[in-house]
Image 1 (cartoon, rainbow, N blue to C red):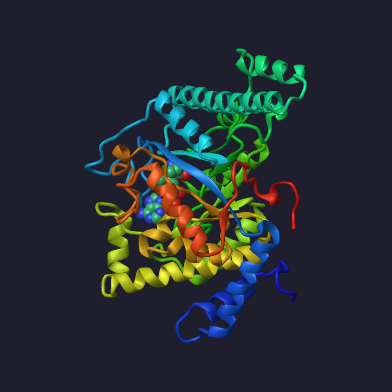
Image 2: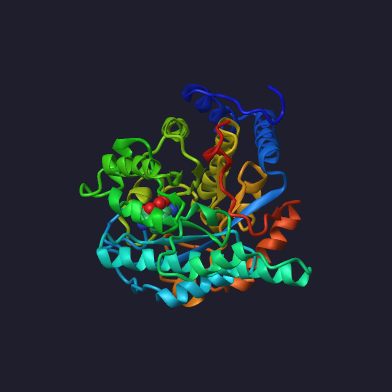
Length: 410
Ligand code: SAM
């Protein structure tokens, strides 16, 4: 296999590779190094040294679901619930646009309610309108400053964007303004359509585990696996670029499960993958399950192994799926201070700096030790730019950063 080539692997081969690259006893350092080098080369082939940024805005922790591992689930004690005002959310997105972020990710707990839909469609339309306008006005100023003739077509577009009939998904404004990714859970097809029409074009819904039996152990019976899977497929049907992912190190999970997860991403034609280690959170049932299975081991060491396994999986996803987007998730940094940089050298190409206002961050604690909860967006930006430089990569400025896989399968 030539360096940088995408390789088609079946479940057994993926399983074998994981054993050779990670499992104590069968681990082979040379294979492991070759895997990481190959993954990095495939990444370089499709993305050069560029990393796509998504400004992550955790706009609400109100949740009607009770995922048994999550720190903001409905029945989690001691969580102060919040929803950021539409005005504040818009101003954060405008800050992101002004600071060269190509897209934002709006994430929250789940709330299947007409008021939440109105909130979302209003805010998506406003973000698209304001950021597209900023771009068009900049274009107009640029023409004026470079002594080019006024372009009536630009004025016409500005009129349209300002009008009531503006639709955020209008293809004429593709790649203009800021791109919008959503991660707001399981909704109906009609609601997904509304969000897509308003201008959301990317959606992240993790399958958490593609093994239905394991899934049912970490969710209540009211949240069946079949529903999650149906939603992922609806998102594709509606036209979103679809992201999914799993947690790594769920009690009861095997390497075989994880190998099947990768095959699942490929079979479901996923455009973006966001995986992270499962991290315990106090007062959640899955933390008790974890304690029962792993209570006797050194937790720090165990988490370091889960971190390492996550990066092995990232590498395998990259070499088997080629031109998808893969996130270096925040949970990686919770375990290893340089976790996201390591992931970016092993196949990841997306970073999600947290832009949630500092005052809300401590109430969006999905798991223990979530990093950056006392930082401001400005500090996160500086810190990440520095971290990228240290590994010879740089942020791709002001591009949406779509996964090429959405347009062309490799
Ligand atoms: N409610 C939306 C959903 O479920 O898709 C979006 C928000 S949800 C909090 C985002 C992701 O956080 C989940 O998909 C899950 O994988 C992750 N998460 C929650 N609790 C976690 C934990 N204890 N450790 C690691 N990841 C966790």
